[in-house]
Image 1 (cartoon, rainbow, N blue to C red):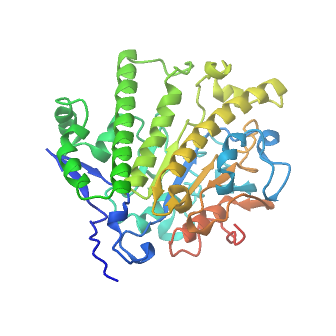
Image 2: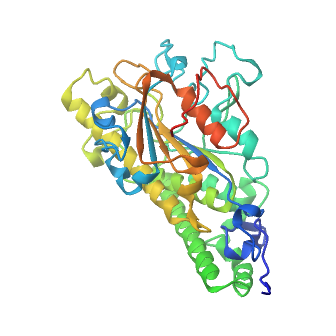
Image 3: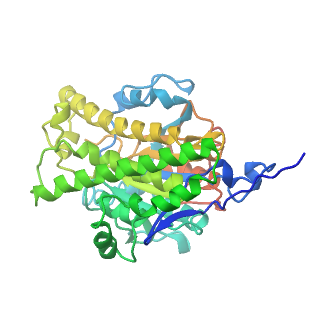
Length: 425
């Protein structure tokens, strides 16, 4: 048998007039007669962290059943189409976040560091967040070591060391230009891109040239991918034009504009594109900040989020919180569907991703850090999915983070106050 197929480099870019767009994994990037796992194009794990504030109402979050094929709780219902990719951990606690002076002061900071910033007790890696620990190990050969996004400004969840936070980017236009735009700086990129409606116009010649070398399935994949980029770019432009027209809004309280949902969804689209094109393998998204005064009139919640989180066991307030927390899960479910639709070889991105969705508060009314929401999406690193693991009471959140780190290929035996890993996950 003669193998004459030629392959193209995994890191091939479509380029033109300074613009550069990475490509998804194509069949043409895999040498003929070679297993994908044995090539430079082999899929690497993608690791993500999605933070939501103010915990989750326990009776609406914790399922009634455990083990395989568990019954989804009301807040988790939007994830039903991808339940085979879900691993839910309950009875999780993060003691490092329990210092309450001031309230919410270290809630975000200790979610991924599991380290009270006032206590430097565990050596040279003290204060580093787990996403950055993982990024140091698997992000060295990507254009962006990691990506940190938000939909509301302020605060931080990612740290390169004790009290050394990474800024959260809330402007999707800047994120888009950082990943795809031409020029050496954002100012340069903006100036260049104002001359055209889309950066894709810069690379069309390269795209047409490449298409002539590809098979039918790869051509279709590239065309769909470029159209996806064009759609996101268009959404970003419309979204930011609307934001620019609003001017400065008061800090709080303020109602959720109709496009806040769109903003959150676009930020997730950015992560999906970054994962698909190999821009980065590690990303985090903080949907809403701690102590947020945002309201949600679109789901009939007109009370500001932070005061509402102090529900005092009032059933009416808890029901409103359920609506907000379900809305957040719907955003995550849409992101999951996007990742499932992106194919790499004979898999989807959900097969190689591990993305933790959670909060660093359990009962928001008490500001406690026990019974934390901790939902892992994806089968990257060998996670089995479709199971609810009811851990022993007060199992450290660090156990979840250490498990993820090791499954991502990081050579680490200890992290924070971890007492072990989840071998059954």
